[in-house]
Length: 65
View 1 (cartoon, one colour):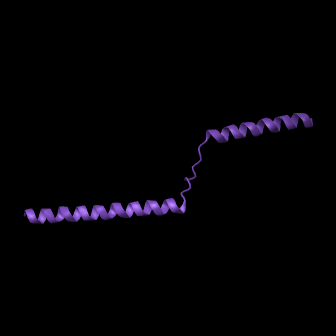
View 2 (cartoon, rainbow, N blue to C red; view 1 turned 45 degrees about the vertical axis):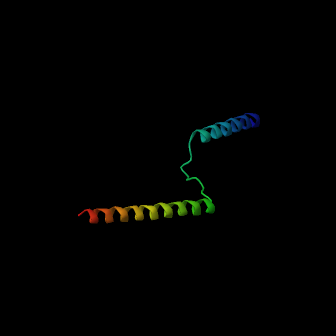
View 3 (spheres, one colour; view 1 turned 60 degrees about the vertical axis):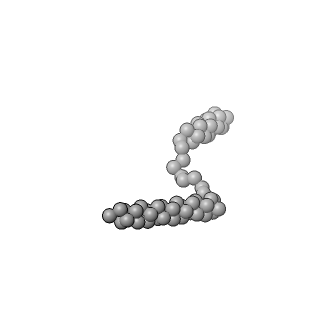
């Protein structure tokens, strides 16, 4: 009986591992502190550039009128 039980447990463990590999995790990917700082700096640069461009467009529209 013990031998049968041990074999079944081993097979169940293997099946469980195989199923776990098939299912993707819903946990978000880890982003390091340095990477977050880099992303924030890029976002700030894009926001600044967008503000400058929108100001230039607004000035051009007022000059055209």
